[in-house]
Length: 435
Image (cartoon, rainbow, N blue to C red):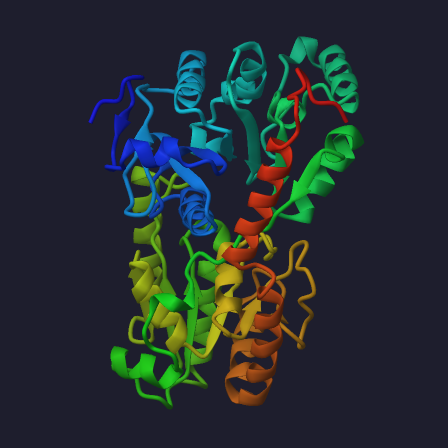
C-alpha cells in the first residue's frame, strides 16, 4: 500500500492507532530489515517487540526487508542511503508526528554508506523533525581515511575536532549531533573514551538481549526437548549457536571434535546457524559453507556433527533446551556484545568459550569456562572434562544464567522507554548538543 509520503506500507496497521495515542512514538531505522540474515535486524525485531509490550508506539523503517507480524514496517523508496533518502526519512517522521527516529547503526547494515552519519545534522536544519537517537552496534573498525598526501595534516585537524566533540571519523555526526547516543557494551565506550572524552560523556550503555528466548519452546526440561528431537537422554550433546562465519572458530571446533571422537565416540555436536548474512554474502557464503561441509567429511566426523543451517527460532530454542554444553570458540574471544553468548547463558546452558573483552561478572570455572582461541587440542580436552563433570556444568550454568538475567528484553525496553520519555519531556531541543 502506498503512503502519502511515498513509502510502501509492508504491514497493515490502522493509521488512527498510530496517531491517536499520546505515548512516545519511535521509528527504528535499520539498513536492511532481514532478521534471518542480519544480527542488527534480529536485535531490532526483538527490541521493538519488547518496546511495544512496554506501551510505546513503535515502527520499523528500512530501505530493504520484509514485515513481521508484531509492529508496522515501512520501506523507504530509495535504492541507496543517499542525502535525498535521509531527507525523505525526516519528512516521513515529521508527517507521522514521531517523537524519535532511532538509528540502529552498523556500517555493513547500511551498505557502508558514510552519508548516514549526516542524519542528526540534517535533522537540526529541517524544521519540525523529531529527535534523533543512535545505537552503535560496532565501533572502532571504520575510520575515515584521508588521501595519503593530505593524511598528516588532515589527521591532526580531525583529531582536534574529535577531542572537541564536534564529530568523529567513524560516524561523522552520529555521536556528536544526535539527541541520544547508545552503545551496547563497555568495550565500545572505552574506544570512544580513548578518542574523545567529550564524546564519551554523552554516551549511555544499554546491553543487547538474547537472540532467542526460552519461552519459544513448550519443552521446559532437557528430557522433554530430547524426547521431541528423538535424542537419547544419556547421550552428551554440545551445541554451537550463531552465524557460521570464519571468525567464529568453527574450524577449530571441528578438529576438536575429531580429537574428542577418539575418546568420546558418543559425543554429538550441533552447529545451529546459517552462513549467509550481510557480513558474508552470496558466493562468499556458499564457498565458506562448502568448506565447512567438506571439512566435516574429511575429518571423519559426519556421524557426530550435525550442521543444521538456519533454523526458525522455536526450533533453535528446542535444540538449546536439549543440549548439555554450549561451545563458542570465537577466534577473537567472546564479549557481552555476543547475542549468541547471552542466549546460551539465558537458557541455563554451561558455556565453554574464549575470552576477548568485557564479560561482566562471568568468571572461569564459576559461571563460564574459558579456553585459548585457535587451539583444538585444549578445546577437545575442555569438552571432554566438562562432559565428565555434570556437577561442574550444573554449577557454572546456574551462575551464568544469573549474570544473563541482567540482559533480558523487558529490562532493556524499560531503559529505552525511560530515556525516551526523559528527553522528550524537556521543553526545548537544543540546536546542537553539547558535552
